[in-house]
Image (cartoon, rainbow, N blue to C red; front, top):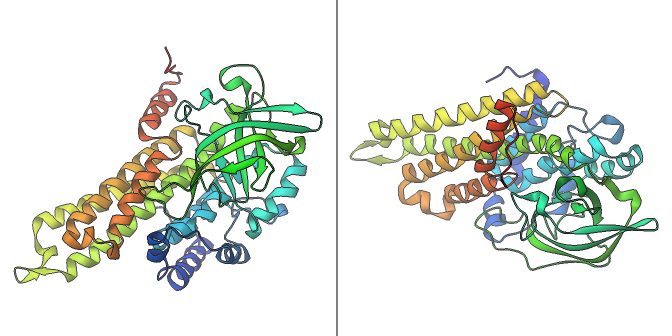
Length: 385
């Protein structure tokens, strides 16, 4: 693990104390009841300066390197992943797309609301027939005077129905594939935008997920963030998002490890702590190795990125490894907890459910492996041929 500065350690302690004091006793309830993160708590995160940590100071952000935001995100997510969601989205999510590729007018108008917690932006890319093959999307936006008119449907938007704004990727021209794609910002209350019923997912309870339907939704041209042909820019932003995703997986692994380490030294069988049994020691050792390796991969990519986007290869390696680590480590935690690991009260089963969700979101491990090979070899692989 890298050496942190005093300021970074203070930031971690602030986030850990906030999570322990305000979220620890509510996390289980939020998960059980599929309850959204309270708006007043999001505003509190903004007041504490924990949103938009990586956004420039001139927009109200912290102007900090990506690593600082990931440190805060992990501390909160270890206790309550739902509470870490706004930190993730504001520092490593669609707000970064606006910072990197939006106009100065767009940054000044949109980013301060993200930093304060007044607005959360969710990203909407997938469609019923366009998931990993994102360039197959068919939702369209045509120019009509000083507006864009959007038609189509979107699926698997994390935050759908809950977020105030959506960065929606659409087809802006007649060109096929990535060349015709761009992105536009759409308000939740835009006329013609409707949401399907909230999905009941295996994990990520409270985040919100629903189909989005666009029927002649009119959006000012001033809200066009990525113009036609700019879809390739998404991969720069995706490298940032993938480290945020990987950090959510890291938080799962570390929390599962911490709880398991306590449990095996408290639980007694055959007259002694179960930590005395060699098989338990081996399982715990595997958990430690996987968590430590994931942290090093994430921190390497974040440190090398500084205030900019990470190298795509390093981001994909970190995400793929961390995603699979979280599934493996949370599964080992369930086994070492025995029947208690299967009980919702202990939250280990929630960690395992959430771990699978992070592996799917933002590019599956299968897709990451393809990208890792492509980046390493310096080649492009056409999945269609």
